[in-house]
Image 1 (tube, rainbow, N blue to C red):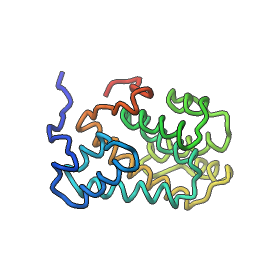
Image 2 (cartoon, rainbow, N blue to C red; image 1 turned 90 degrees about the horizontal axis):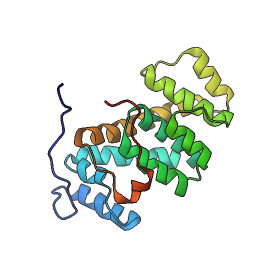
Image 3 (cartoon, rainbow, N blue to C red; image 1 turned 180 degrees about the vertical axis):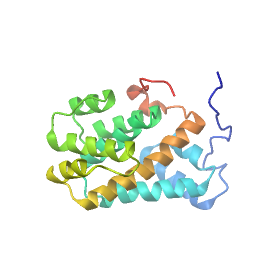
Image 4 (cartoon, one colour; image 1 turned 120 degrees about the vertical axis):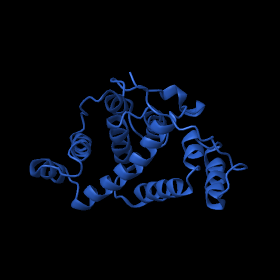
Length: 194
């Protein structure tokens, strides 16, 4: 069986990265989190990837119109669908400790089970539909999403999150990124191997 490819570029640090903008981003992250996540250290090998990810992530977090809990539902749904163990661990921690995601919702998202909250379930289902249909949801799927209290603008915001998470999920796949110690208690593995 042919093994999956893995990039061999180094994990960069603030000292080893050449790009000043990437260095600044890494320094800022270290100040706010206390460490530079391995994901960022890998992304810094392409400053455009790191910058695009951070810019899109910031826009989604600050102006998507989703609550912090809803944001984590979107991010965890995408990461689970993409089979990204790193982002599942990271967003499980962020969801539970920073965004107020309840333990039952977090567990359901990690296990791919239905959510008891109808609004969150509509968000989960529509995010899955956008992913599986590659941006072509069915009319009924869109209508269910809108009836749950979301707007058409929210559809575009989910698209932004899909873009951001695709960058991070695929980067993690390409590097087989080691889960940072901080996220370790939330380790997750996809049910089906890639």
